[in-house]
Structure formats: structure tokens, C-alpha cells
Length: 426
Image 1: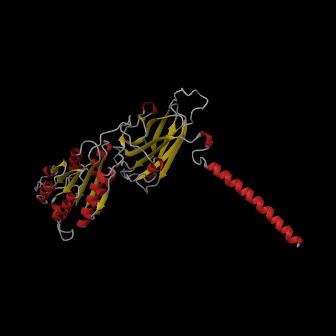
Image 2: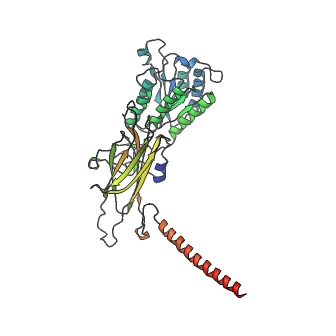
Image 3: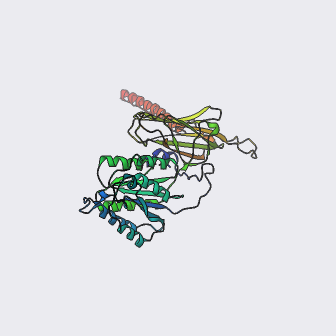
């Protein structure tokens, strides 16, 4: 996970290009172990602070529009989705900041949905207090403990009023735990500062930010996000790279998530059998303000340190995600060898490095989100005499084209000379 663009990713086009048909890993060391299929879980987190009284959404108050949207969403929740509702700012109307910033509560528990009960709970809400977004996100993450697809949908009309607990930092901490929990945010007010905070929360966890100013838009977007939770997804497996190849985790084919500090090197290992081709790609997301020029490097080396192949990419601040990849085909065993000889795997070390930097005021922890894709496929046929990683059989095509051009040139020259000789004779 990872999701960037971004986890957004999309986000991460190169992962698809290099890893078509990828099977998700089950664990960081036993990627092929089947896991129990758990029901997708969603928790809707609704801002019920005093500012939700404002009547600027299709002539209704923000609170009334949110309630109507919730009723429509609850009617359409897929049967397989376990849904819960949490509020922030719904219970404390006073001026004590310390108390107001603890005002978050689960209104309806995550589980099989009783539509009537959930609608009744929503109907009792009235705009009341503060906007403790950070504490609400922490509470929602606890509500959604466990595996499977998990999603928080935050609907709010303002930025957090309970600093110094920055909700964006909270979202990064949630993502850094490798919980594969996505947070989507919806802003009810077209304010640049609010948009910046909600975008940061979403991007830190691979979610999305949407600005909505009409009740129909709100209902439609929340329904889309709830439905998305029911769709099968490939969740990256949390792993932790080492400072050197010797202590690196052994990975199998799969999608992995990690965190890497600014300008850090992290190592992973993959066993490649004779006749297999290793395909690896890495994407690093800039989930905070970074300097404009940066790069990412992915190297495959032997255990003794000899470089096999590398891939690199540079960025200039125009995108939030930077990706690169590599391919390494290991030659098959000689056909003359005894068939009873067990093929020995080669342990290939993968080094992931980045050249991100930032101002001293930017927090460097947790590290930047990393998604690493590993795939092992049948290598190219030795009889094809593949000459390079890039062109492969394309060399044959170039040779045929060159030969064809030469023959065509000679024929055209001979025909031209013959026609000229005929013309002179006449």
C-alpha cells in the first residue's frame, strides 16, 4: 500500500506496465499463502460542529444536506459492506478547548447495516461544537481494526480546530503503520486552506479529496466511495527494507509497502531461478512539501555487490509520485546437464534509493511512502539469442529491415540503369 497517487494512484502507472497479471502477496515472507476473505469495512465520519448550521447548500443547512445524503447512501449500501458512522463535534457545545477537542464518538458501530437504526441515529444529530478531525481519524482507525478493504470517508466544512495534533500528520502516522487504511475526504466549503488540509489527509493514505457544494454531488460521491470499498483491490503488504543486503527481507512476487527517509538507501532480496525473469518497479510519493529536484534509483546487484542492472528516474516537482523499474532475465540451465540436478536460485539484492530533500521545517518522519512491485515470470527463450534488455527480439526486426532496404536499393539502382540504357538506345 501505498497508496499516491497516491497509493493513486492511482497513481503508479509504471507498476501496471511492468507487472501485468500480478498476484498480491499474502505476507512479506510467504507471499503465496492464502488469506481469509474479510468483508469490506467503511466508516463515515461526519463533522457536526457549529459551522454546519450555515445555509449555503442548495438553500439548506450543511447539516440538512449531509443528513439527506446519508439517508440516500444508507439505502444503497452493498450487502457485503460493513458500515459504521462516527461524529466529531456533535456533543460538547461549550468553550473549553480541551474538552471540545475530545468530542468524537462512534454513532453507529461498524458491522452489518440496519438501515432503519442507522437513519434514526443520524436524524438525532444537530450542529454543536468543535472540529477535532485528528482525534476523529484516530478513533475511526481503531473502529476499523482488522484486515480486508477498509475505508474512512470524512465529510467536513472546516479545518481542524484542535492543533497541535495536525490531522495530516495523523494520516501519515496511520499510513506508516502499514494498515492499508484509505481516507477519502469531502469538503463542503471551497476554501483554499481547507482544501490543502483535506488533500494532504487523503494523499497520505492513497485516498481522494472532493469539493462538493450541492447535496446531489455529496450523495453521489459518498455512494461511489462506499461502493469502491466493495470492489476487489490489491493491497500492498507491509515490509521493512534493511540498511544492507545481508539483512534484507526475502520477498516473493507481490506488491509491498514501506517508508523511506529522505536520501536513504533500503535493501530487499529476491530469489531468481534459472530461466526466470525478475521484473521490479518502485514508486515513491512526495506526501509533503519537498524541494523541486529529486530522483529515485532501483538497482539489482549480486550478493557480492556486482551491479546487474539499474533503473532511475528524475523529477522536477510537477508530480507527486516518481517511479522507475528494471528487468533481469536469468539464463536457464544448460540442456546437457543431468535433469535430476535441482536448479539453484540466485539471490538478487534490490536497492531502493531516493534523492528527496526539503526545508529544515519539514518533518522527515515518518519516511516517504514506497510501493515496491516484484514479479517473476518465465524468461525469454535462450534460442532467441536475446541480445539486450531493451530491444530483445527487436534486433532481428532491425536486421530484416536493413537487409530489405539494401536489396530494394540494389534492385532500384539496377532497374534505373537499365531504363536509362534503353532510353539512350532509342
